[in-house]
Image (tube, rainbow, N blue to C red; front, side, top):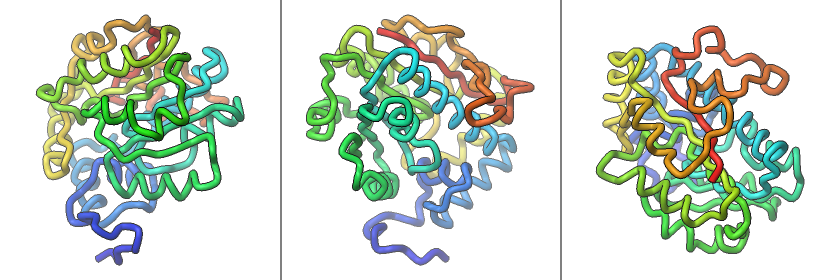
Length: 272
């Protein structure tokens, strides 16, 4: 049994968390026994799970590098940011432009607590504990209004978070709320689990997430593409994770590069 640290006071460590499961899949240490057991159950149903987690992280790095270096974006709103690990958004963006500003948003208290510790000495970054299903609360928060100027182009990141939003919670409406709140020239980056390939394994893994506070809703390519309405996709469009602008120079070869469909998640970046 894990010894619960002081910063986790009040956290239900007996109920697995999607953020902490992702941390464990990436080899992190900010997770508890329930998270590890649930992740192992996911891997039993879907053995490529840890490889997909790594592939997704590499996509995030490539997307942020594109946004900061090629698109000239200096503001990032990272929704569902998760537990901090190597290559966080502010590290990648500020490595390109030291003036880049980042606001992290996550519902998981462990992710938020660790983010706050990591960002204690970084005035260009902040973290907010909030629910992506409440865009208005996020957009009017002091963390967002004091650090970001949404009248200027901003990158909204929804990487591996939208499939945790059920259809009844209106994912398209959530995206639209952030789209209309940001200026023309802003960007949206997403990755999203799909059941277009290996549906039985995907749904088997999804069953495990029913024990968390955020179940999984895989969506088809057509539905995911529809979520990007109002954005012009940059090349190469909506593709499997390893196929979005592969770049071995930064981060190494994607573990699923030889067969991108094994990633069972689509990724894309669009410009408003």
